[in-house]
Image (cartoon, rainbow, N blue to C red):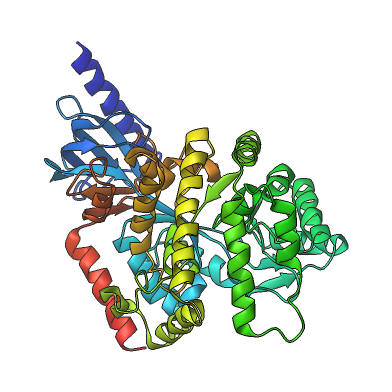
Length: 492
């Protein structure tokens, strides 16, 4: 009786979705296939539930029509059926920190960045700093079906002080300039406001107040002039790259911040500046306070301040060592000559003038960063996966799988790491009813894997197929995307 009721329920869901998509008083062509079914697959739905072996998932149009035991799910008679025996189905992945315009010219974003994202199972991205007009156009092309790519959410230009850290930027010098900056970006349709490191305290808190007034969230860096606890209390939605977090766990936080903001002595040599920085970093590590750490965790949890550590950026650029440099990585074949030059400059700037003790210190800071993320996760602070692609050494698409591995190294379980790239981003974006888990009625963004990521999180890289907004891409399709991206790189 239970199986019969399940079959009837699944059939009703499938019918209703097909009914809506065909339209009232319209007939669906009898010659067209009706949906796709993945049978006998193990479903990892990212809700936290245990694996569900021998399940069938039916996709109709852009939606998941039914999910259930293979013995009970009704498969439409004209559906295309894929045998998922021995394979694992997970939700599509989200990279919550990318820069689509970081690929250089618009053609690079379209012909290089997007194919790599799709081929690696990235079905949602949050662009954290780019030109609004370009990002709106790119999103429209994807939504219309003109171009294959993930869902895009974006911030537009950074809000920063002078001199700004990056471009594109809107300079905000004081609280009086915040209304125009926030109003301008909100009217242009951005999803978030992005704050940067060189904002003054006055400008930062002015932005926080303006965002509260106008009903839009702000995210980004914790400015050098502000503590991570203050940023959390001010309502910052997410903190990127752990900016300000390690400093906020130090018993010498205020003293170290004053030193960080103070200019060096007149005519200081580059060698002396590096030595001063090295001393500062040692004091940061040596002054870690359990009490301060616990207080910060409580603040983040109370205010629901999300964290996007972006470990690929930290490992391969921020705390770069000769061992973690990816200059000769085979994935470099996907880089255009222009991007290779940009990456080489970034790597050289990070490595230049440093010695073995400096690299050892970087390894210690990275180790502490991993530890703090593990402690935040244990405390319940929400964490999302992100990469900062296409910064030097951070390969679009590929690097998200690296980030998941680092999150597990930090102490997240494989399921928690998977959720950091699926259910958690959906929750943060307010899209849990639409994406993030494998449930009937949700958007069909899925990955079919050859191995179980709960046994080894790097198995998320073993992609057999990608379902992007209902479109089924087989391994041959994904390989073609990679080949196209490589061809574009070779010709530019």
